[in-house]
Image (cartoon, rainbow, N blue to C red):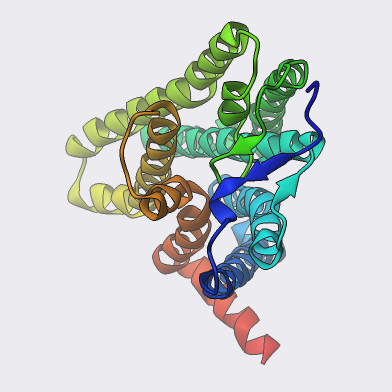
Length: 305
């Protein structure tokens, strides 16, 4: 990024004493996120009966939540207490990479969850032969590493741009916002970004919806007891999927519609939904719906006292 030594986060200016209230709120949310997701990870890792594909994927969601929020909360909390709100181009690209990879990892994990439930419900007798821990490990590795490689290419292309400005109207680094500040034509990056959006967001979302539609069709043809058990395991995944998808759609819409008139505070809240709500909602949904996870989490809390 030629001619630029730092980027400025403009939304932190003129907050006055409000920044201390926002800091306390952000710190509280981050602590809750860490506690809930660490409890989920420990419960699944330390309980042998939970070493099953579905529970392993749930722990992957919690690991990804810690990964994504770790790139956002410490930085935004320090900015709230600081008088200067600048970030180096290198650090900005790294934060953008982590946040975008958090999104692709989340969709990849949700897609694997949908596939896991589809196989479990459509082929229950062959399930353990199809979804083995080895197969699951390979799928997680591929679906997490490949998007990161593509995002790395996007970061390299962005780093080569010549900047004509350094003011970011976000509270975190966003690759599309950086591209808008460049003097050069960003057509290649926009095409590459559109390609990644289709491959890593739209296609997984379509496959997830296809899996759940097929599951719904199978359930309608089955007994009420079978339906009840299938819904019990699928509904939490659907709730998590809908919440995350709504957050991503809102963020993409806000980033692309430059002429959209909206109060600054509201736009910030909407753009942060995918980073704040899922890491809190996911462990709560799974803890409330899966008795084995809930019991183990309660046991950890009692032991810590």
